[in-house]
Image (cartoon, rainbow, N blue to C red):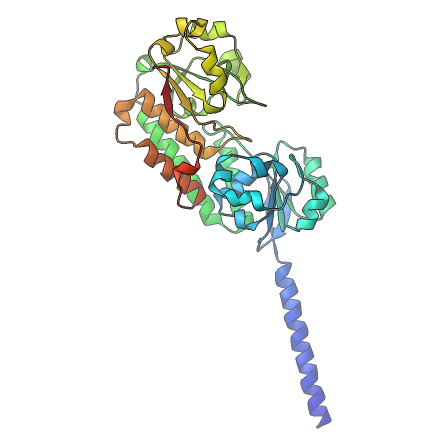
Length: 358
């Protein structure tokens, strides 16, 4: 009898040990991901807790409906009005893990995420150091400019999707972005070069607000709409993908047919175009009422949803006959809902399209 009891007890212990062993094995099960720095990073197969640091990382997480999985944010997210913060106002309630950029290693460890996403440019050594300090897998991702750096954007979306176990969502998002760009391209590419109006974008933000002289040689909404940007090719393309400052005299010399002003810089640009100013008296866009405010799409790196939205608006403004079937409000709602996977109330967003000085 005692032998039977002992045998049963031993069996129960062995079964319990095996179950515990299987559980631990499952918890430690990993997959390997190649990040944008070429690092091979082992991450848990089932990621449930994440942190994103540096400009743009939280944006990518928001596209995957992963905000409920974020266990720590950089301090700037508490006071941000970036599109993803407006889509998910609950972000500001997430515990802070330090300042931007990079957070604080000790606070990150306390939050205990399964994975840390970090956007580059960050030196490989800095990424390796963060992983070594925290003992948590760190996956490097990167931002890019739509139209000229799609490969960077799509690669990051693919990496984030793989880490989060949401490959299908990654494919869907890439296809949506590409389809939107393709549709705009199809409608604008048939416009003969001689029939294209000249355009200029001013008031672009960079380390703060700026007036009309802040612009870009490859302003994304102009690139996607095949527009004739008067500053395109300036200085042989050495100023790609970053704001530049030009002289007022050059804007007068270019004298563009249409001017689009970033909403963040409008207060400054407006003063520069008031009646009896040099720009007001010389620019045909001002005289003809062809000056428009568009939402800021570069906010802690590129807001891809706003970049596409602005491209539709620019295209419809320049070529109304080719876009007469497009209702901008409906298009804006459609784009935001495809990026954030939720019903969107446009009243909660800072999207302002306005014709001014008419």
